[in-house]
Amino acid sequence: MKLCFATNNKNKIEEVQALLNDSFRISGLHDIGCSEELAETQDTLEGNSLQKANYVYKNYSINVFADDTGLEVEALDGEPGIKSARYAGDHRDNEANINLLLANLGDSNKRHAQFRTIITLIHNNLINQFEGVVKGQITIERKGGFGFGYDSVFVPDGYNITFAQMPLDQKNKISHRGLAIEKLVDYLNSLEVG
Image 1 (cartoon, rainbow, N blue to C red):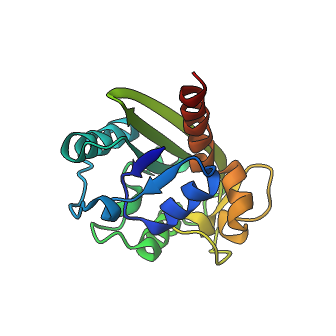
Image 2: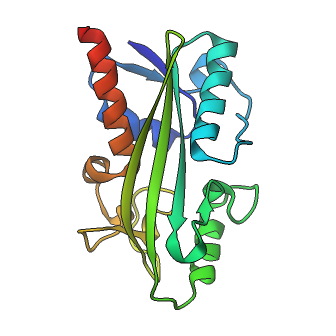
Image 3: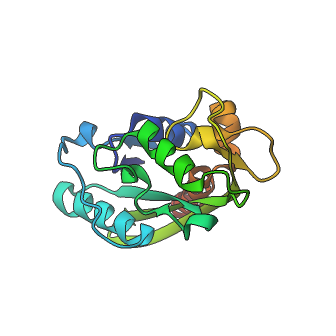
């Protein structure tokens, strides 16, 4: 089954492809000739995910899924949330985003947070959304060299290492995106069987 993942983020595509079996062929936006920056103008993860999937489905006539992910920090009233990628500005600088997050938390011991991913699938004109959530804590300093985004400052509950200290296959088993993709794959498999 051919599906477009509405992103040019190679890290995300690699994460998702590792979760899918051989019966799925994933292409990114670049692969379908889409060079536009997809708009994210909604005020929820659900809205942004749907907005991106709708754009690709209507303009490129391909079955598509799109995600939007936010890091929601309790002590910051859910920030950075939908602004996670642009927390420190529109230039999408991971290091600047982490610096701002750590500065805003300061020496607070209230560091509870969660990563939340919403995936919207548009397949043969049907729309479905899947959610993945992982709870954890924000560290005081960066740890680890794997992953991307806020991975180096997020320790999932039940672990004593950050996402950035985990090999990709371990992270995929417990991550927000992994959990949402698992629901997506289960749904797609049910279509193939049904």
